Amino acid sequence: MRRLPVLPILLVLLVPGSGWSQVPVFASGFAGGSLNLNDTGPVTGGGFAFQLDLGLHYPRASFGAEFARHSVGGGMKAEVLGGFLRVPSFGSGAVLAYAVLGLGNYRFNPPGTGLKTNRLGGSLGPGALFRLGRSGLAFALEARFHSTFSNLPGLTNQQFITAIAGLDLRF
Image: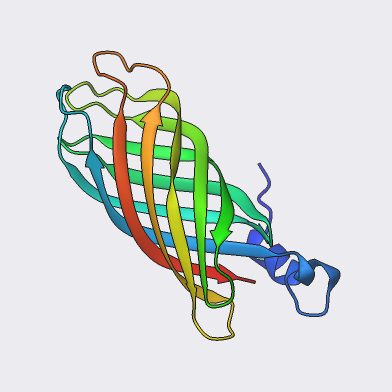
């Protein structure tokens, strides 16, 4: 299989002055915590969470792809690969509040089974961007409620919340 030189292609596309440099691309990286809300299942607790986003930003909405990994207690982890939509709710300039909606594949590894289970799920919550000067850099805060849409074998529907902070960079 032939590998494409991804970094050089991105650099050429984002060179100032080229038509592609005007594409409103952004990348975000977050870290924080997650808390399992399933008090009736065999897994409770919480742990570390991180999330990486890559997308396009427009004045009325931002959308893109995301990858996240959440420790949801008892040794169980949830990996999310999906998409998101951010809709600004109020604010402009230095501070922008938004609502975020996510949809994707949630892959769980229930402890003690050695198996991985995939389920469709979604997330919803508020967020805020705090611009750092005139650069394309912003401090970001986000909280989300996550839920799968179907029961996992041997487990109830998985529901957890995350609170994360990070940096948002617009190119």
